[in-house]
Image: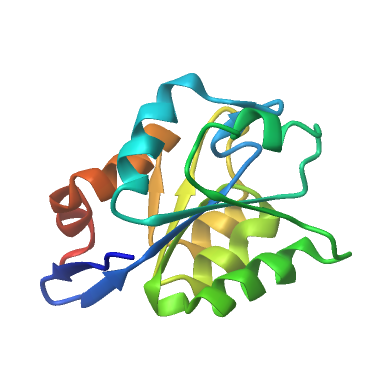
Length: 158
Protein backbone atom coordinates (compact mmCIF):
# COMPACT_ATOMS: atom_id res chain seq x y z
CA UNK A 1 0.00 0.00 0.00
CA UNK A 2 1.33 3.39 -1.01
CA UNK A 3 1.43 6.21 1.49
CA UNK A 4 0.57 9.73 0.50
CA UNK A 5 2.53 12.39 2.32
CA UNK A 6 1.01 15.85 2.18
CA UNK A 7 2.89 18.75 3.70
CA UNK A 8 0.50 21.47 4.87
CA UNK A 9 2.45 24.65 5.70
CA UNK A 10 2.25 25.75 9.33
CA UNK A 11 -0.39 23.07 10.00
CA UNK A 12 0.95 19.53 9.81
CA UNK A 13 2.51 16.86 7.68
CA UNK A 14 0.11 14.03 7.01
CA UNK A 15 0.81 10.52 5.76
CA UNK A 16 -2.49 9.12 4.54
CA UNK A 17 -3.09 5.50 3.58
CA UNK A 18 -6.85 5.12 4.13
CA UNK A 19 -9.96 7.03 3.13
CA UNK A 20 -12.99 5.95 5.15
CA UNK A 21 -16.38 6.89 3.72
CA UNK A 22 -19.82 6.88 5.25
CA UNK A 23 -22.33 5.41 2.79
CA UNK A 24 -25.87 6.83 2.95
CA UNK A 25 -25.99 10.60 2.81
CA UNK A 26 -22.31 10.78 1.87
CA UNK A 27 -21.54 8.64 -1.19
CA UNK A 28 -25.05 7.27 -1.70
CA UNK A 29 -28.56 8.67 -1.75
CA UNK A 30 -31.40 6.39 -0.64
CA UNK A 31 -29.07 3.37 -0.85
CA UNK A 32 -27.85 4.07 -4.40
CA UNK A 33 -24.22 5.03 -5.08
CA UNK A 34 -23.96 8.47 -6.65
CA UNK A 35 -23.02 7.88 -10.29
CA UNK A 36 -20.77 10.93 -10.52
CA UNK A 37 -18.27 9.59 -8.00
CA UNK A 38 -17.56 6.12 -9.41
CA UNK A 39 -14.65 7.38 -11.51
CA UNK A 40 -13.22 9.30 -8.54
CA UNK A 41 -13.34 6.14 -6.40
CA UNK A 42 -11.51 4.17 -9.10
CA UNK A 43 -8.83 6.87 -9.29
CA UNK A 44 -8.42 7.11 -5.52
CA UNK A 45 -8.18 3.31 -5.14
CA UNK A 46 -4.91 3.49 -7.07
CA UNK A 47 -3.36 5.59 -4.28
CA UNK A 48 -5.33 4.85 -1.10
CA UNK A 49 -7.10 1.94 0.54
CA UNK A 50 -10.77 2.87 0.44
CA UNK A 51 -13.26 1.81 3.10
CA UNK A 52 -17.04 2.23 3.18
CA UNK A 53 -18.64 2.01 6.61
CA UNK A 54 -22.40 1.71 6.87
CA UNK A 55 -25.40 0.35 8.72
CA UNK A 56 -26.63 -0.60 5.21
CA UNK A 57 -30.11 0.74 5.93
CA UNK A 58 -31.33 -0.10 2.41
CA UNK A 59 -29.51 -3.46 2.14
CA UNK A 60 -27.85 -2.34 -1.09
CA UNK A 61 -24.22 -1.58 -0.29
CA UNK A 62 -22.69 -4.85 -1.53
CA UNK A 63 -24.58 -4.72 -4.83
CA UNK A 64 -23.88 -1.02 -5.38
CA UNK A 65 -20.13 -1.31 -4.69
CA UNK A 66 -19.46 -4.77 -6.14
CA UNK A 67 -17.26 -3.52 -9.01
CA UNK A 68 -15.11 -1.18 -6.93
CA UNK A 69 -11.79 -1.87 -5.19
CA UNK A 70 -12.70 -1.08 -1.59
CA UNK A 71 -13.47 -2.62 1.78
CA UNK A 72 -17.03 -2.64 3.11
CA UNK A 73 -17.66 -2.56 6.85
CA UNK A 74 -21.27 -3.16 7.85
CA UNK A 75 -21.98 -1.88 11.34
CA UNK A 76 -23.30 -4.47 13.78
CA UNK A 77 -23.21 -2.86 17.23
CA UNK A 78 -25.87 -0.86 19.05
CA UNK A 79 -23.60 2.20 18.99
CA UNK A 80 -22.63 3.06 15.42
CA UNK A 81 -20.90 6.27 16.51
CA UNK A 82 -18.37 4.39 18.61
CA UNK A 83 -18.08 1.55 16.10
CA UNK A 84 -17.10 4.04 13.39
CA UNK A 85 -14.57 5.70 15.67
CA UNK A 86 -13.12 2.30 16.65
CA UNK A 87 -12.72 1.41 12.97
CA UNK A 88 -10.62 4.54 12.41
CA UNK A 89 -8.51 3.77 15.48
CA UNK A 90 -7.93 0.17 14.31
CA UNK A 91 -6.66 1.44 10.96
CA UNK A 92 -4.40 3.98 12.73
CA UNK A 93 -6.16 7.33 12.89
CA UNK A 94 -2.99 9.22 11.90
CA UNK A 95 -3.14 7.51 8.49
CA UNK A 96 -6.86 8.05 7.87
CA UNK A 97 -9.05 10.60 6.21
CA UNK A 98 -12.74 10.21 7.00
CA UNK A 99 -15.73 11.63 5.17
CA UNK A 100 -19.30 11.70 6.52
CA UNK A 101 -22.31 13.86 7.24
CA UNK A 102 -24.42 12.44 10.07
CA UNK A 103 -24.41 12.60 13.84
CA UNK A 104 -22.97 9.09 13.99
CA UNK A 105 -19.95 10.25 11.92
CA UNK A 106 -18.78 12.93 14.37
CA UNK A 107 -16.33 10.81 16.40
CA UNK A 108 -15.00 9.20 13.22
CA UNK A 109 -14.35 12.63 11.68
CA UNK A 110 -12.74 13.92 14.85
CA UNK A 111 -10.49 10.87 15.28
CA UNK A 112 -9.19 10.77 11.71
CA UNK A 113 -6.13 12.79 10.76
CA UNK A 114 -8.35 14.66 8.30
CA UNK A 115 -12.12 14.74 8.84
CA UNK A 116 -14.36 16.07 6.09
CA UNK A 117 -18.05 16.80 6.55
CA UNK A 118 -20.18 16.72 3.40
CA UNK A 119 -23.13 19.07 3.28
CA UNK A 120 -25.00 17.11 0.63
CA UNK A 121 -28.55 16.14 -0.27
CA UNK A 122 -29.35 15.28 3.35
CA UNK A 123 -27.49 18.28 4.72
CA UNK A 124 -25.18 17.51 7.62
CA UNK A 125 -25.39 17.36 11.37
CA UNK A 126 -23.89 20.30 13.23
CA UNK A 127 -22.12 17.78 15.49
CA UNK A 128 -20.24 16.36 12.49
CA UNK A 129 -19.65 19.79 11.02
CA UNK A 130 -17.97 20.97 14.24
CA UNK A 131 -15.93 17.75 14.52
CA UNK A 132 -14.47 18.04 11.02
CA UNK A 133 -11.41 19.83 9.63
CA UNK A 134 -13.11 20.73 6.34
CA UNK A 135 -16.70 21.06 5.11
CA UNK A 136 -17.52 20.44 1.43
CA UNK A 137 -20.68 21.07 -0.55
CA UNK A 138 -20.61 17.66 -2.23
CA UNK A 139 -18.90 14.28 -2.06
CA UNK A 140 -17.25 14.99 -5.41
CA UNK A 141 -15.59 18.10 -3.99
CA UNK A 142 -14.49 16.16 -0.90
CA UNK A 143 -12.94 13.30 -2.89
CA UNK A 144 -11.24 15.69 -5.31
CA UNK A 145 -9.23 17.09 -2.38
CA UNK A 146 -7.24 13.83 -2.48
CA UNK A 147 -6.92 13.77 -6.26
CA UNK A 148 -5.73 17.40 -6.25
CA UNK A 149 -3.99 17.72 -2.84
CA UNK A 150 -3.05 21.37 -3.42
CA UNK A 151 -6.74 22.13 -2.75
CA UNK A 152 -6.42 20.39 0.61
CA UNK A 153 -3.24 22.34 1.33
CA UNK A 154 -4.86 25.65 0.36
CA UNK A 155 -7.77 25.01 2.73
CA UNK A 156 -5.78 23.88 5.77
CA UNK A 157 -2.58 25.92 5.62
CA UNK A 158 -2.09 28.46 8.38
